[in-house]
Image: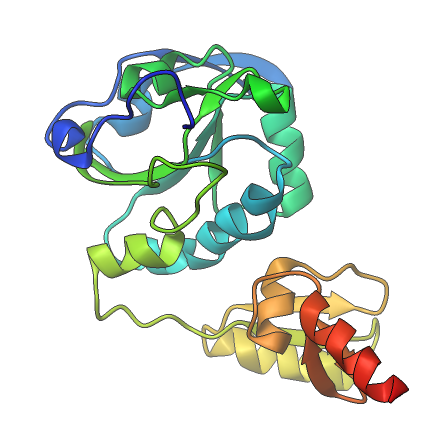
Length: 254
């Protein structure tokens, strides 16, 4: 079991206000107290909470996909997207910067006060994590939980219902999700500039990858249609992830 206590049900939480706490955030290298009212009052907010910054599922899928779908969520009435984790402000800020998550507001729940108030503080001492947040997402309207998706209470780190796509489908089942657009460009190239200008002029969001840049999760999905790492290509053909690559290598050896 993930915790020593039973996780709350969605029905028990929906219609109730979020916990009233003060978060110790660090904005522009200055400490700042953020209250629940400041984050939620008079707003429609999507929250997703996860076990920890820099952990595998959180970094490879959970945060990147919310960051990618943030513009669509905002087009459908969401004012802000918050990522809450039982980590300190330095860790959360560094993680967000490394992820390029400019569309997400990361909130450090370092003491676990908000998470405990949600009934989502679980015991992960077997992993050396101490007490962390169970994985969930919720739609909060004017400080009241309108809808919450809680991962099933089972072993491991389930990731089945708190994803960004599930949340977007709840808000608007007919929302159009744009495919990621990636431009591989070279500095000083006039043709590259012309292509990017055409995209911008038509309101098309794209990721510009110059010759020396790293590839992000959004780029990975734009090229391969997949969110998981690795994705292996040979001669312009997608082989797949690790299992498919091992099978491809074995086939070549026959």
